[in-house]
Each structure stands twice: as structure tokens, then as C-alpha cells.
Image (tube, rainbow, N blue to C red; front, side):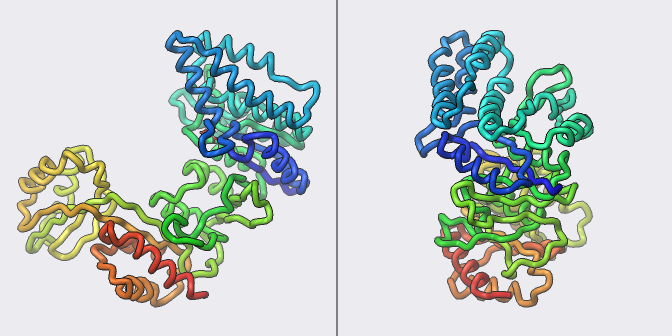
Length: 441
Ligand code: ASP
């Protein structure tokens, strides 16, 4: 039978009303057999996620402070969900007694945080009538704290084969010595991906509170259209620029197994969302798949006659950054010029040291830093097969009277990155969006 793994994020499981929506989604398709759950998230803007309450509670315990009040607040959130769902003969009192004792015995911050998904998954399993599988028994890390796929597969795959329907808590697993370890924040996405791979799922559905990715940031481009399909590589490019809905490590387990990810909205299940596919996917309906950008960049400009024939020039420039512990983002270059784009935050306070170092290493004719730069990347597998992409891009920017300070196109033809003054950022984003999205393939 086909099998889908569905991960529900914290806002999708924040209260009983949301749980009911989740149950409707699961019950709508027989194939939705494995469910990965987050801890209860925010019910509104001012609410606090249970994960954050748990960290806070544990920190109090670790400092020898009284933590009863915070723990009672956490318990109340779960008790309300149980009551409002009308679950009878189900309670978490014993679990909370155990948690309290473990906090007093310093069971660890990761253990504390993991209880959010553990308890929520228990409730969801009871509500759906699914089995509950504790992630500590099936998701493993090695002695260095690195996630261990071999060991995980060995345990998880046969267990899933023997369990037709189950809820598995996201976010955590266990170390070789049995202690609990979590992924980084937002890590239930990673668990979902691991479970999908272990189950040999046909699809990994990641249910959240938005209907997938938008072509451009809606705070900059109003009414941006959604992205219907995107490849893993395109997603990496956009995520690098800050367009994030999914934990970045969630891509790898399913990608290697060729399992697509579908980002869906629990509050609007009728929306198709965005599907993340392998590289061979058909081009999408537009030349470009998405546009993303980053403010707060600086560029070190270096000019020197005959730079091109000086062996080791680039290495010496980059060595100057390395010595000052600064990483770079891009290096667009000309015959006698080289520019190094760096995040302004990383550069602040180190400008003089870096310039001095470059001076003494390569003796440039000109050397200066320009700040207040923004980068914009247009990403699209459709660009490879479309002629005139650059023409559309630069015409749009010229018509919007935006000066392009830097251009960088990778040889994969998957993206073009441009640098503009920060003050031109919004205008440039809108101009690019309008130019490309109006043109249908
Ligand atoms: N509950 C965890 C967090 O808030 C993990 C997750 O939701 O994915 O980061």
C-alpha cells in the first residue's frame, strides 16, 4: 500500500481545535499512516510555545529554583487539550510525576525539551486510535551527537512494517548511553523526513500554517503567488537567502531516497501547497521559481593592474579573511578587480585589520569597503532552457531605475545573484517579480 508520512508543526497542534483539523486531514486518506507531531505551539501571537516553557522550567530546576508553577502551566495546556477533545480514560498525571522527578535529577535540557513532542504525540495517538512509538527507541545519535541513519533504519524500518498506523514524536532521539538528544530547533521536520525514508513513503507531507512557499517574500511583494513545485537545489538557494519554512536538515534523508516533500497548510487543507522534487523535475510554469534577498551585506573591492596574472592573488585575499575569522558569501571578479561580499555583521569591528592584511599581502592599487548592500537572487530551473532571462531581469531593473552594483551567475544557470543598494531593495524585488511572473512559459 502507498504510504504517506505526515508531520504536523506546533501551530497545527496548539489546541484541541487544531487537533480536530489534524484528525480530519489524517482520516481523509487511508495512506496517511505515519504521523510525526511537534509540541503545542503558539495559539496566538503573544502565546508561548510549550518547548520554550519546558526550557524555562528546566533552567529553573537546574538553578535550584522552584519550578512547580511553570510545570503546572505546561500540564494545564495538555490537560485542556485532553478535556476539549473529550478523551476519556486518558491522562498524563503519571508522565508529569516522572518529568518532575527527572527535572529534579537533572535529566538534561534536551530531555526536558523533548517532553513537549512526547506528550503531544501520546495525546494524538490516543485521539486517532493509532499506536504510539517513542522516538527515543527508534531514532539514534552516535557518540559525537551525529544522527545515525544505519542504526535508526535497523530499528525503525521493521517496527514500521509491523505497525500499520503510528504517531511518532518529532525533535528527539537517543544517544548510545540512552540519554535523550534533540535536533536543533524546528527539528521535528527532520524526524518527519527520517520516518518517511524509513517507511519508504511515497510522499512526506509537512503540515504547517502557510500554504507552502511564495515566489517572493509577501512583506515586500504583496499578493505573491505560491510556488507549486521547487527542486531541492532551488530550495537550498532560496533558503540560503532566508526564505525558510522547513528545517534545512529535513531535506537530506528524503532527498537521497527520492521522496518528494509537500508543504501544506493545516488551516487550508484545500490548498495544494508546494511540492519539493528531485532535480529532474519538469520546469515550473514560470521561468523563475522564486526570488529571495538579504539586506545587510558589505563588499570589499580590490583593484590591481594585471591581477589576473598574479599567482596566488585570490588565495592571499581570502587568507586575510580567514586570519580574521570571517567567512565570505560571493567573489565576483573582473580581470583587474576582485570583490568579496561579506555579511556586514561579520565584518563590523574587523575592517581595519582585514584591509591592513590585504594591503600587506597583495599591495592593491585600490582597496575600499562599500556597505549598505543587499543581495537578490532569482532562482529557477526554467532559466536553463529560456533565452533572454538576463535581458528581462536587467530591463526590469533599468526601468525601475535601480543601479546594479554586482552580478554573479553560477555555471549551473540555476540562479543569478545581483547586488543593489539596500535602499533599492524593495523596488528591485517588486520590479523583478512583476517582470517574470507576468511572462508565462
Ligand atoms: N518543538 C520544537 C521547537 O519548537 C521542535 C519543532 O517544533 O520542530 O523547536
